Length: 115
Length: 112
Image 1 (tube, rainbow over the protein chains, first blue to last red):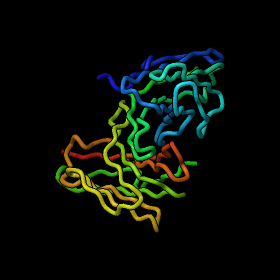
Image 2 (cartoon, chains in turn blue, red):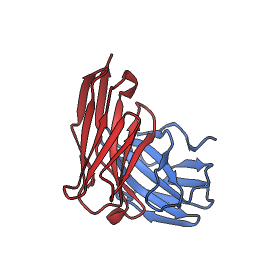
Image 3 (cartoon, each protein chain N blue to C red):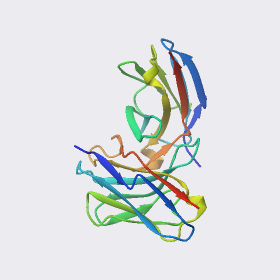
Image 4 (cartoon, each protein chain N blue to C red):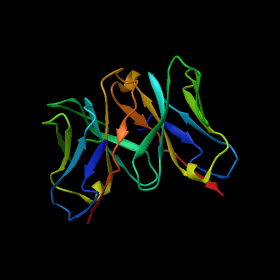
């Protein structure tokens, strides 16, 4: 099993450009999450989804949009990239069973630089 | 702001020694989770302790939870060079609902 797969792994953008990060999971998990990690810091939640067709804001949602059209995919969009969005982005998923008492499974991240 | 805060921020030990790191959180929780992150990789779940548990073991890992002090500790015994990584605590459930709130992490260097 691949688990959680993020594409692309690296990307460099110019200020104002747009792009979409893709997260795919093959574990049939209900919950999916997008985080950003900045140097020397933990993860901060951007947006999350508790099921197909549903999304919710996390701690730092401004400047990002998400969509969950299919259960296995969770897309993170930057409409107009800003240098402050330079970061490493992680996607995670977890099953609904046991609600919060379940670990999250992480992808290996997308390293995004915005010039 | 992040709910979990970790101490120390960095730790350097010799192979074979024990490594202890602490985590504090601010609001109610349902569970406290610990994750490891190797350089350039995603987080890997290590251990979960529920709010009604006080101590949990998994291999060389020992986790304690004190809900009255809103704190947790992770002990890695007999450390190995392969344990070199960053370790994060994450508060789950309770006020966080379906989400996890991560601490800033402890960077552990195990010297051979």
